[in-house]
Amino acid sequence: MPLKKSDFAHFKKRLEELRQQIMHALEGSKKEVTSPDEAKGYSQHSADEGTDDFVKNVSLQVTNKEFTILRQIDRALEKIEDGTYGTCDLSGEEIPLKRLEAIPYATMTVKAQEKFEKGLL
Image 1 (cartoon, rainbow, N blue to C red):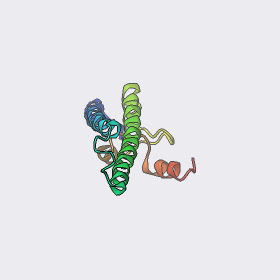
Image 2: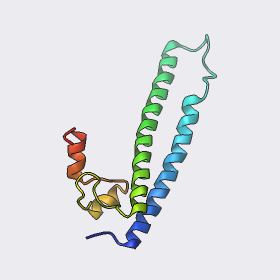
Image 3: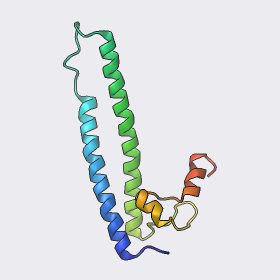
Image 4: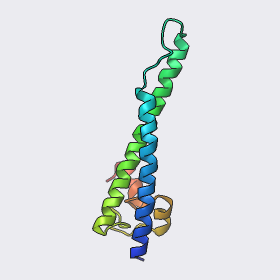
């Protein structure tokens, strides 16, 4: 069953809210990763430095995942604007409403997503 105009408005609002949350989180991650280490110096143990580097690396990995989701959100918002939201980018099939409720930035059906992730498409 195709999405109604009210569905488009509902998902657009959810996507915009999610986008704001991620942008806020990215801002915090950026500050954490780019801030200088005031504690570094001769008195800091090398294991502490390793832990600090590990934490920064984890923050960068999280930030990368957030950027990926942000791109997916932007793509979903584009699809809302052009009226194709809820339609799979790869197969053209309708994305089930339950999937969109769970992952509002989904642009593929589960089957197409699995094939895409396995490199079959």
